[in-house]
Length: 351
Ligand code: FAD
Image (cartoon, rainbow, N blue to C red; front, top):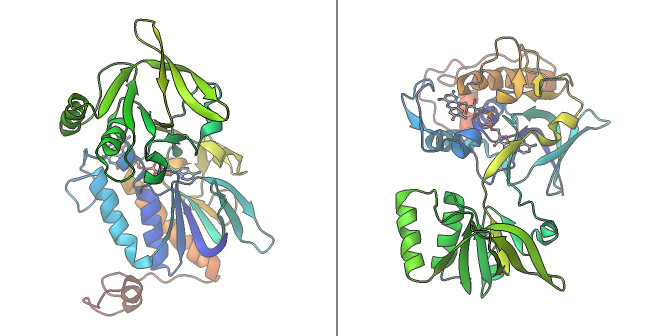
């Protein structure tokens, strides 16, 4: 499906989210894309529950809280979200716009593109077992359970030892809707890394026979016709075992991949995009870049610095798109900005 917009923001980390806000203040509509199924980038994926102390005006907040506040702040601008999908390509069009294509085949036609891709797209760590990829989307899923209709009466195996895997197994074992016939949690050792309350619930479900913990490493698969029928595993003692499976959820965590960005024809230095620090334009006019993905003399990989970069990039894009200088207005006092934000004019009106 082709959708037209003023801007596409690639990456819903803190800087991408604030980019949407700054574009909104310039009256520009946005679509925002992230490989993760939720907003927040590194703040949520790498340190969601840890405190951040250097966001101006917020003495302390967690990664999750910062993502939630930024998401709330951009709500008035109603960005179109594309989560759980990766931007695969950016193609300049004859009319000066860009065609941005996602891994789910959405095509966004944008007047400007903002790359806020951080350390790369967070994608699930793949299971490297010969032949397994053929079952992706039918019997093999990453990080999340499939819809209840695909679990009903099935033998589920969740592979992983961290909280995502433990949460999937608990969710499947306690769900009334789409109840699996059996739930196995397969990990290389009988030690799981999850919050204490989750571990206690896991133990209770194991004791009650709702979850079976299987210790071993996956070494191969067993097919029955076109179907994945079982996993071959090796125990720590070196014994081979066969684990029957109808649905396999691999939850081995996510890792960042620079991915296709390197193929977009933009000037790069040591895997980072080179930008002009007055406009945060990349080497291609109309494509801007902000946050951890960029490099320039003095660059610091801090959220605060990304916020500054996003602000200047939005001003530069607004000027380039309108062909005239953009007058600075304050959110405290501009009635125009109040209208865009959908707030009453509480400040002095000199906008
Ligand atoms: P990211 O947060 O990395 O977000 C980029 C997003 O883009 C990701 O969600 C990714 O999935 C997505 N993406 C990338 N490529 C694609 C693609 N092709 N298609 C779709 N999506 C894509 N900074 C501070 O200022 N203060 C701190 O206290 C602080 N503590 C930190 C603690 C830790 C442990 C770490 C690791 C970092 C910390 N940082 C801190 C750094 C801070 O998190 C980063 O500077 C910030 O997250 C950068 O934001 P970003 O939006 O540029 O990138």
